[in-house]
Image (cartoon, rainbow, N blue to C red; front, side, top):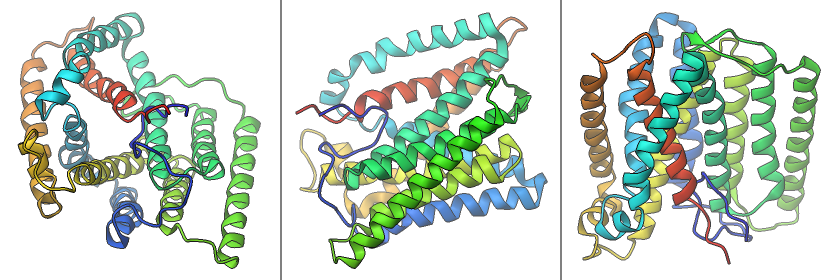
Length: 336
């Protein structure tokens, strides 16, 4: 079985439908609840641009930073996992920092900003792909997920935005007809998937409601973030809120399923934290650890910026890039 990097997925992706990952309440929250949160906060910023900074800070401190911390519950919260992933924890960070600093030294802020914008688009899409596969294998649904992201990114590149996140951005030269062609293909793929699902429903085949809701949530947020919102940074904010909240919920659900038998004596802290009645404890730990880490990072780097190397930006993006690479390893599906 080919590996599926970057993605939160079941250890063995399913070919038969699974209607829910944990149950209707959780799954509807994962798809529609998270989508509603992103649309509400992003929409508030569109309605009142002065809310951009407050909403961004809310997203960073309550969602983005804790979602990075939640990655490390998979590899650093017990001795066995830390030993198995020692290179990800100790060897990879200096390499990522060196690569990020090298990109800044060679290409400046525009290089860092461009790498971040396009890599995060790929990272977010791989997350959607992986969660969809946690429900079932469905090549047409996966084509919808990739197709809408490709359309959105090509459309955004064809606009040639000079800046993203108040910093210069380079965009590859994409003719508008190429973006339009990608859009036509994405819409045809979506129509084919919807048609197949309607036919399956008429035949009385087993339902996979959670999977359908999740794929549709990806379609909606991608269309809003890349196609409907004109400003690249405000569009990104919609997608970032959606991605962060979704990841926090999914990783907790994965850990809860992993320790469904109760507290594991070999992993007492993590297994106790991930029992079904301790979801808020899990969120509080991720929030607390991420707050301490990012406050310390800010203090350590705030006085180090220079005209040659923007140290604060390099450090923050290096943490993001390390998170992307770690996810690419730990969420791989095992080969049969």
